[in-house]
Length: 575
Image 1 (cartoon, rainbow, N blue to C red):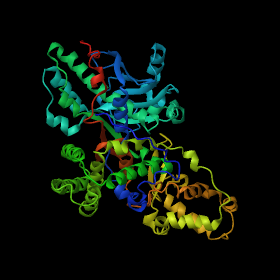
Image 2: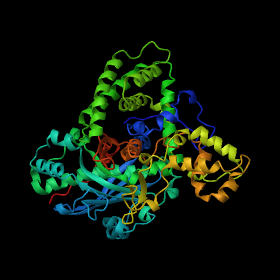
Image 3: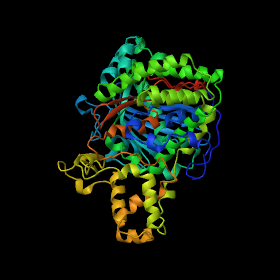
Image 4: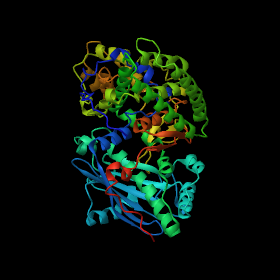
């Protein structure tokens, strides 16, 4: 990491700001389609990259004051992250999990490790309380002193391989490392008020928590440190004086895995203003880069460096899912084209970055175009990094309905912003075959088939396209000069979609412009879009509803930061 200058920006919630490159932003009709959203790549504006820059810029200090883990790998540890004003602590509990209880599924009841991110430094009373609740996860309860709740399982083959090799004084096989890419994978990282944790509203005014999901990203980053620490600890317990630590270059290749199902898919539908701000920031960043009149030597060198790093990532990216296999084949072809194009970059075009982008739109697949977007942003931190301050949202600003609006104006908003929805024929079976609901057992989102699965009568309002069509049909029975308030008195069921329609002019990227209950809809497209904003790599679908990814691979470790080298940290205790 390197120090990056910041740019002060107004919040995106203000409707009249950020007009700098309006004409260069890609249109919502192009950007907000599932096929493109399902091809998204992480960028320097992804949430984990924002966290890492802040940590470096502000000189955060990391320690491990508690390491009480026995030779079976059972015990507890505490990792502290001290920022300019506050300290956050990851409290980790390590467990001896029988093989037959290890599962990636959200319905699992036991895990190899469980975690919470504590607001401050926990004392013994706090630790005792957490030890009674955190290992239980959903069955326990945490408090407003905790910002997240999470759990992880070992990637058994690689974890055992690493421990065994280190215990013998040997480094693990690189092929084994690259085949998996992580020692543990999380199966859930809960925050924002779930199971008693602090609500986001309680911490959103803190600068370090202003960008979305910063508590969760910090929790996962510290968890990555734990996964290496416990593997090295068990190697010492097994091999004693023969044991060695992981070599730095091998350790860098390890991230934190994550298994994610349908639970995260509806999030971006339920938070339209937040989604708008994420997408608008990314599109504004691309527009700013495309508007540049020249290519400096420094920017050219950074572009080539980013491409080489992306090539390494692509070489390590594998999947057995047919859809992703096809995408990866396209991406490898695209990278050959990009590599050849960069040999002659910059061209003599008036705006060379814009010319490179237009070439990509013509020459590359959707997967390649979104990878090119990530590459173009990478050299321009001083121009775009300040935009990360605009990625949060006060969603209450769009909650109030304008009841005085005339029906004719509401119809016009529908026509201008939801034409993509009004063109869908929902009398055709394939356009309405699926439905979203919440499971009774885990209170998690699920996707059913209408007429086959139970629960359609409790369908969640996630098909915005159909809701827009139903609103349009009922509006036709009202006079143009009738008020929206009068309409909603007769049809209160439309309040949800009316609110979204009225907000649409201010938030052009708020809606996914596809049918979310169509037979060919892929939930993994929703998941990939959100995961790319997290900073996830190695997107590997296991079905159309379940995916594995990797976080923080190739990034530094908290306890390896240069600012900690003099202080050091406690080594794993010999057994």
